[in-house]
Image (cartoon, rainbow, N blue to C red; front, top):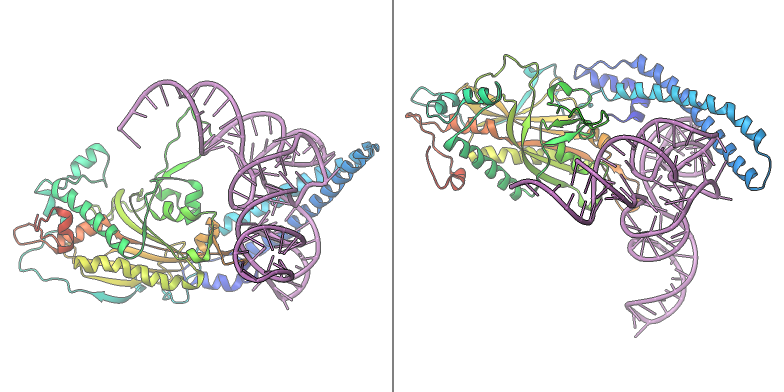
Length: 428
RNA sequence: GGAGACGUGGCCGAGAGGCUGAAGGCGCUCCCCUGCUAAGGGAGUAUAGGGUUUGUAGCUCUAUCGAGAGUUCGAAUCUCUCCGUCUCCGCCA
C-alpha cells in the first residue's frame, strides 16, 4: 500500500507515476472522498472528545454525591449523534481504504518505461547457449520415456498441471534444492522453515490480497467450525510466510539487513493461463521454490536488490546455465513491486529464454501493510524496505539442467556442483 | 477431542465500571553525585491516526490493555464470538 498521506498531498504526481505502469488513478473520486473523510472524521472525533469530557464530569459529580440525572439526559442525545457520526466516518474511511489497497506501487525511478513485456530491457547475458550436433529433446521427452516423469499418474491422483517425478529425476530435484539452500547459506542468509498455509493477514501483508484472490488456493472450512473461523490459503510463494515473520515488528536498526532463505512448495491456481505452457514442468499448480527475502534499511534497498539478484545468478552460474537478466519495464512489474529483475534461463527444448527467477524491490509498499519498522536509538520507528527473489524456481531449474546437459543418447550429465548431492553420480 | 486456568507497555506485574494511557519493579536513555568499582539521587522512556502548520517542530484531538462485536453517560474491568498460551486427560508423526 502507498502512503495515504503522500497520496493526499501529491495525488496528481502519483497519478502520473502510476500512469507509466498503465494504471489510471481516479483522482477526482479520491479527492471527493478525501474531503468527505476529513469533515466526517473531524466531526466524529469532536463528538468523541465531547462525550469523554462529559462522561468524566458525570463520574466526578457522582463521586461527590451530586444528582447526575440531568447530566445523563444531556449526554443521551449526544450518544445517538456520535454513533451516526462514527458510522459515517468509518464508512468513508473503509471506501478509501479499499481504493488505496487496490493501487499498485509506484515504479522506482530506475525502472525502464514501457507498456508491456516487449519493452523489458535486457541488461546482461551470461553464458553461451550450447550448440548440439543432434536433435535436442525437451525435458518431457528426455524423462517420460525412461519412466521418470509421469503426467498421467499426476492427473489420476490430482488433476492436470501437477506432476509425478520418479527415480533419479525426483532425486535431482532434491539435489537442486539442497544445492541452492547451501549456496545461499554461504551468501549469509538464515535458513527458515515456515508454514505452507497462511491466513489472510499474511496475504494482505505481502499484497496478494485483496486483489489477487483468484490466483490462490483457499482452504475449505469445516462445516462444524464457526463462520468466524479464519480463512486459510496455500502459499503461492514462500515470500508470504517468510516476509510475514517480521509483520508488526519494530526491529533494531543494528539487526538490518535481515536475510532469510527458505524452500517451500508453491501453490498457484493459474487461473487465466489455460492454454499456456501446458506441456511439462514449466507451469504447474504445485512447484518447488527456494526464496530469498531481505528486510533492509530504506536507503539500501536498491543495493540489496542488486545483491540478491546476484545471489540468484550465482546459482545459474555454478550450474553453468546460460541466462540473461531483464529489467522489467513499468508496464510489466508486479503490483507490489517498484523495481524487478527477471532472470531468464536458456531452454534448448524451446530455443528460448524463460523466466526462472524474479527479484523485486518493494520499497515500503509491503512494509506499510506489514507494519514492519526499524528504530535506531530513541528515534521514531521507520518503515523498512523489503526485497525478495527466487533463488531459484526449482522445477524450472530442473527443466533447464535436463535440457542443457542432455546427451545424444538421451542421458543427462549431472553438473559438477550437483554431484555430491547425487551420491557422486555423473550421469543419469 | 474433553475439562479447567489465563492473555495488561521492551520484560515482570498491579488494577475487578469513572480521578487509569494505565501503580510498582526490572531494563534502557540523559543528568547529578562519587579516587576506581559498587552503590546512591533526579528526570525521561508505547504505537498509530486526525486537525492546525511550509514542516517528520510545536500545540491539540482520537484510538489502542490478544482481536472483533455488545451492554453503559462512561469498559483494561461486565457479556458474547474468535485467536492464542498454559495444566490435566485422550489421540497422534
